[in-house]
Image (cartoon, rainbow, N blue to C red; front, side):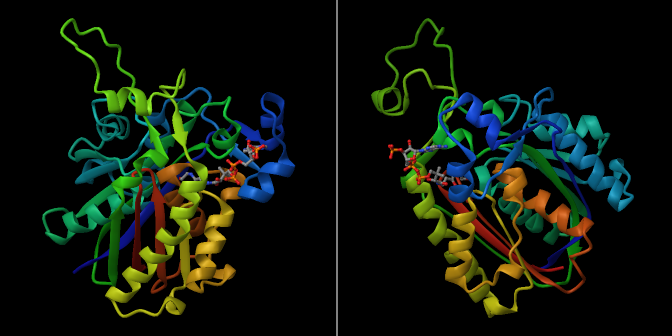
Length: 332
Ligand code: UT7
């Protein structure tokens, strides 16, 4: 099985910052509650830009950093759970904005696990030899789905985009993807339809009564405690399973970039795996949770800081609505 080489990375973080004090102005909450329980001090919100704009900016920056002609991109995979349209796919909008007219395009939605899923799909496409390079863009505008009257969920989320341009390599690569659909009620956001079809009967009772939170049909709904409990075990299991597949001891990893949902989840999972803090990337303090964009934004930060060196063994691990989870271990 072939591996993956990063040709370029890029990210886009909106200018507007909502710190914890801004939330105290609109909700009964405080920095004293939020920071110790989540590790979050602030998040960025795209107040005047659509999601595809953020994705296109991150994509352009990834191509620039690789000095790569957009017309040479073979495939664009966009991961997002906050698309601007039902269709077309966000990847088609981004293709237009960056001028990648020769690329095939599709989107992936495995929520916060989306970057890992997209990388794994891309690896399979590259492995066939038919595709030379793939642009992955993870772009998320959680502010479109956040209920800003719900203090337990609204304080977690922000907006951002990250992108990577990759090609095939002969370095080590392994992955693990999992899902527990039984747990899907722990985190969901319904699509809102106007029932104006003249032939509609009663909507399925299960759907109607079980998932309609009154007045909140358009919002993200979350059972925070259930997600928390799932996440700690899922992250540790995903990394252990991937490491076992290639006979790697977790202590041999040089860097772990986890999904940034809650600092306590990250630290507890890392402790369970025996990963020391100096090998653990976090940026949740200034970014909050930006769903599938967390990992590529973090990766871009680490590349820009010169902290990713050839032959390093890095691990991406995440979880999200679904509930989905997954990990990748690869040599850079
Ligand atoms: O990408 C995946 C996304 N989701 C996650 O990763 C979520 C994981 N879960 C969590 O991070 C935590 O469950 C939260 C941080 C969301 C919430 O922490 P918690 O300790 O599970 O709080 P809770 O929802 O059980 O609420 C405990 C109390 C409640 O008050 P009462 O009923 O005990 O009086 C809440 O109303 O804390 C209250 N509370 C708050 N108080 C001040 C909840 N949120 C806040 C808040 N400020 N922002």
